[in-house]
Amino acid sequence: MAAKPGKSASPDWRTYGPLQVDWANWMPMGGSYVAPSLNSEGQPLYLAINCNAKRLNATGQSGTWKTWDAPQSDFEQQLIKDLCKAKGG
Image 1 (tube, helix red, strand yellow):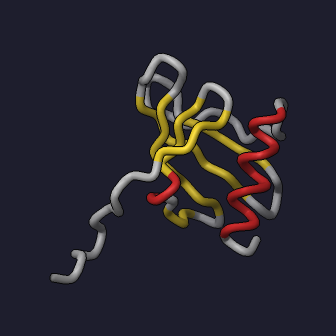
Image 2 (tube, rainbow, N blue to C red; image 1 turned 90 degrees about the horizontal axis):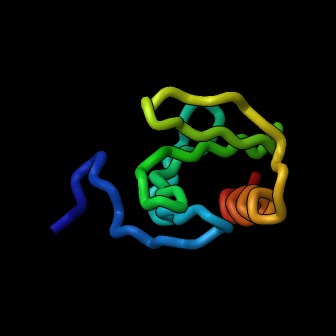
């Protein structure tokens, strides 16, 4: 039985600092990659990474995107490095 288009893959949760990132479900979107994530309180959010700019973004509690920022902490730098290496970016 083939997977249906748009059906997400089984989650592969990876921990980066206070974040849990669903590594199996990165989706290309507007030149970036977006993945479902959980913050330190277990609240859902979306994380976006732009490999070309080496910047990241996330949704806030209202579901709106924040601003594109350079990585501030070691775990943010590692997250960008791991994803962009995996995606060949």
